[in-house]
Length: 362
Image (cartoon, rainbow, N blue to C red; front, side):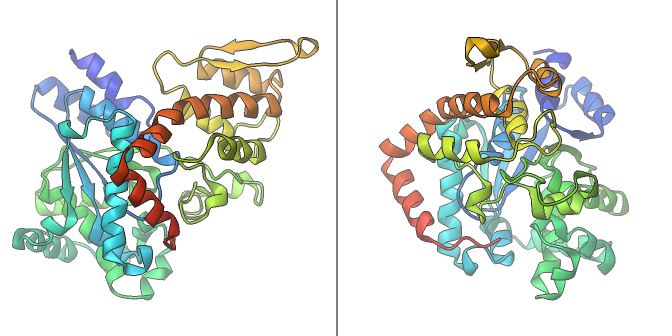
């Protein structure tokens, strides 16, 4: 695979690369690249997570040696499942089951458990160096990576360790690429700044979009939405089931949720139905969106690209109701293999049922 094809795979469907020049130089050098994504095992897998899951698949296809970090201790610090580590571990296995279900070959990636890393004294040596290289104010500004505001660091001191741990994860694994949603940007920038101070490798950051809550921005002016508000308030959330479509939801549940979703006429900003098409459906090879309408409203149309969908929607040539119906149908077709996987895999099904009963906190 040539450099241009690898660049295409690595960079597609991301909203930011820091920096693309560094990425190109790395690829042109021919060196083996190591990438990672750390995930908090904090609840049930919703479709927003499919964005990074498909991105992992892209990076593996592009020849990146990929590490997937089950950030169990991070989730414990962040009070997930009320600090129940057994449930946190099961939530990590739940994520791995979903990856298998969508065709991410987990045998080709290296799954790392935070519990193994923290048992190594070298990990704590790096963490202390990271902490010493940064001020308290700098660390507190990065707390939004936890889905929390800076002032929530006052709740308990462990919250302030979290950003330093995430930077340490990157240095400990000796990574070239860090993949994460836009809500992880501050951690990646902290890692890049700290690398300069400590003489460590400066990681290239790939940021995927956050999928907007099904409730959208209906309760606030879109112009008022800044990065921190988006990360904490507007993204699809496991702890707020009404805001999310889960990958195991029944076809009727998916249809019901999509039909109730925020989807203003002609407006694509913070529109979850539009985003599901852009970042999930049209990210699939050869996908086409079939919009069925009565003949008096123009009849059935087949939309062959996201760019075409956006143009037609902005022009008012596709009604929100028709878009919702088509999106629900296409999304159900995408999720059907995942539902079947959970029906036939006993371990996946039992973990899912246990997690459904557990209380998921933010």
